[in-house]
Image 1 (cartoon, one colour):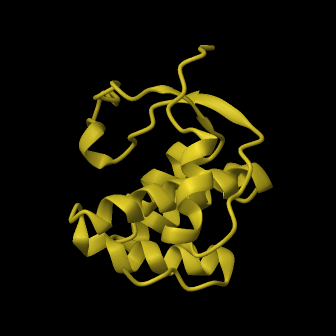
Image 2 (spheres, rainbow, N blue to C red):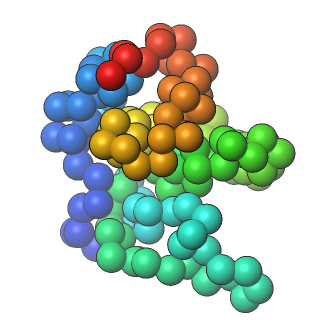
Length: 137
């Protein structure tokens, strides 16, 4: 499905990357239509259904997968399975950029007290991808 509705904007990346990831902003070069809030609370079991579509729209390639992976970091086997199944997206330049944006937005949420248990795991994943430690709040 194509749409002009934007879920993730370049201006957010430009304003927030240094603050939350400690790196220069990436450019969003490839987009796709996506959910924009993909985590386990928005998925059902059999049959698989994606819930909570209020934020859907255009987003960077790899964003939804990167976000689902980030929400899975507390369950290492699940996180590893996501990387295995979706590495063909996440391991591309576009997928890496999308994942970094998802990590940055999740770190922003963590800074506001949302999912505090994920903050160190997300920070570690961001450092793994960039080689740069994330700034401390």
